[in-house]
Length: 283
Image 1: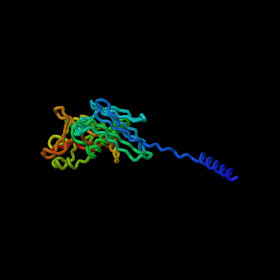
Image 2 (image 1 turned 90 degrees about the vertical axis):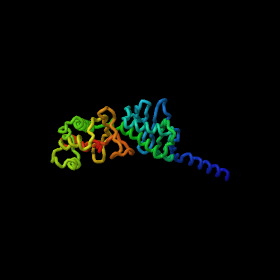
Image 3 (image 1 turned 45 degrees about the horizontal axis):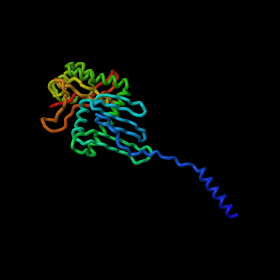
Image 4 (image 1 turned 60 degrees about the vertical axis):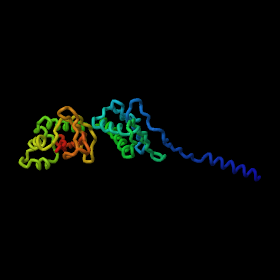
């Protein structure tokens, strides 16, 4: 009888094992190589996974055209780099060796993975700070595409108001420019204490004598809405000779950072939209 009891026990164990719940199999991302660049492409960036379920890709071709898309199909856009963005990319291409980079979370559910490829032609190996800057550049392009595809009617009207404001100042129509300016006037008053409560006159003096560079807008790129509800735009300007305006180092210095893209904020008010910022200043 003992052998029989042992057989029943063995059968019981096997049945219990068969009925036990099966542990789910985790989907673990694998560290494959970064996205390969098509012939002639300059940069490829891809972000997948994470709690938000990212699946975004950015590609820049040899003509500096940007293609942005994701696997959900709600972002698919192509656009040209601005001259400021192109200069930034060219600086990396000329300085650094080719980059093939993977940034990945530990292999757990919702892990995020980011890959970057850059066809650098320089001699310097990119350090972590440079790689993070390029990653942020690519991520900003993805955000730019998403903002452009989902831009609201108010944001479109804010962009129009900004264009009218800058164009009015560039053409000397300071009365029109004053209608669209809703920012602080303390600096304008400080520069011109002889003018009392006359915004068009302050703007005229600022553009013609005080050092504001009141030129025609070259590009206006929508950047989204900030925490205060202001619409944000990056603006490039055109020099009188037709070239891109570049603000050099301050105060006669020969070395230092240069800027060719300038942030402007636009606020929605009861009567429409008001620009909160003045044009660039060159002492």
